[in-house]
Amino acid sequence: MMRLTRRKRYYLRRVFFWLDVILVLALLTIGVYVVYDRFFRLPSPSSSPVSDSATEEKLAFDKFNILLLGLDGREGLNDRSDTIILVSLDEKNKKAQLLSIPRDTRVKVRGKLDKINAAYAYGGVDLSLKTVSNFLGVHIDRYVIIKFDGLVKLVDLAGGIDVHVPTRMYKPSEGIDLYPGDQHLDGEQVLAYTRFRNDKYGDLDRARRQQEALQLLATKILKEKSLSQLVEFINLAFEEVETDLSMREMVALARLASPVLENGVVTKILPGQSVKINEIWYYEADLANLPEVLAIVPTETLKNS
Image (tube, rainbow, N blue to C red; front, side, top):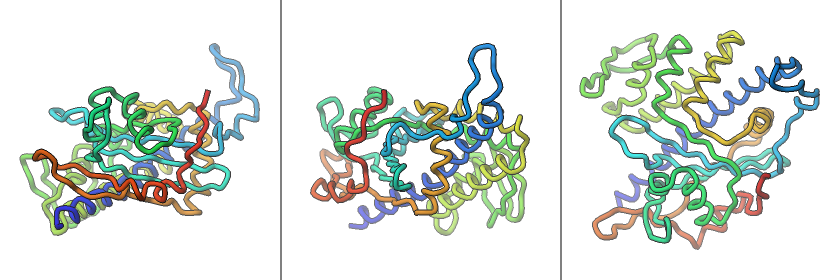
């Protein structure tokens, strides 16, 4: 029983963490919009000028599903997706829902029962999209893949961030050596700050520090940097974020971010329980409650051309 409780707490922490990752993505799309809006009227040798209507971008359909995959990316780790979240957007009603799918969820992958995060290792993003879509019974329009190791580069590009280190953080095996107090941290130090878990609340404190670091980074990039530096940040971010969202769709998402946040984002975790099968722990989804969980998720999203 305690194992189930701990695992559910883990998935809840991942949802909170990814809420802030999505905030960073929203800020990134706003940055894209700033650059796009500043330059869209200027003709380039390879393209014709864009009309004024480009500033009124909308998603192709009122309801839009995005699969968000998180990859750790550190050397020595496999390519299974660490985090899987279905982001469902309702542009007409300005609403959004995040459905966190535990990575150990037992589903059919290529016709055989396996953990859902194995889909990425076996067939990349295409198999992940197919597996999640078949399992939930929803169409997925776009995907976003985030690589965690890009954090170091992004922080360094921002010139570091200022944080308050609450306690001595020392774990030489992971390169962590920070003293308490107000500190200006570079990328490697921020990575150490967000990974440290040997304090009072362990992973809970770690999740809070991840949230804090992402918010500080996004704020500094957008509020303190020049337009040219913002363009550089966007270029670097795109090296660490893989997506099939178009520029126009990102502009539309930037416009949608503010009203969606005002209405509140619904966050859910796929209901279920931990089970041990052949000495392997899985997360068995409660399919009886799936319709209720998917109630806000658009189930008939049309496929974009």
